[in-house]
Image (tube, rainbow, N blue to C red; front, side, top):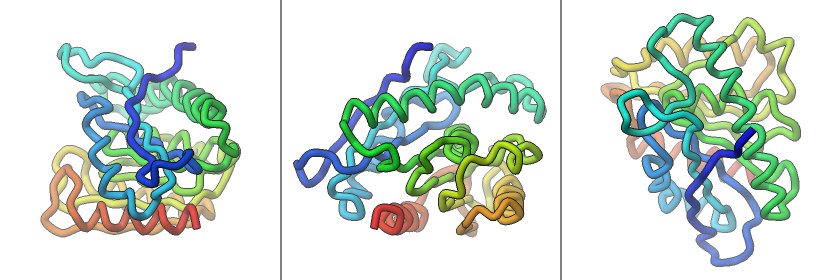
Length: 215
């Protein structure tokens, strides 16, 4: 299976990387969409290398990438899609950590929208566990299989705008309940008047989650 391509930023300290933070973009975007988060989080993780990955498949529009096709948004199709894409992300985690000669647990995963769905699905099924999973405006795909497939209980941060019209905020509320039921430590923040996007509050919450994860 081919590996994912990524663009990198950091470490801010200019030293050899001590941690890896993987960023997973949303539908129709690409790796450049999230790499600008790295300077915002550099003070929380000055020794981290940020790797923003390109999703494995081109979007049908001819612009951007996707983790899976969302022409059919039914739960079964979403589950099939995330299961097809997950091995790419699993492989990237292992290969990138090995390339950097980092310990196998010295990483965190962040995702936005479809990328958040990937971060949650893959991160909770990977060993060793990530130090943190950050999921913005996403959803928990295949919640019914989580208990049987859970490989770790990494701390999860959920952030979702209450005015999101692309991925309803109820998807993160459902994810929060399912994660709590599975014994996964989860912190959830629902931001009033925020649509499908990131704001300064969410970015600050992410910095704190990363700082805690790597402390």
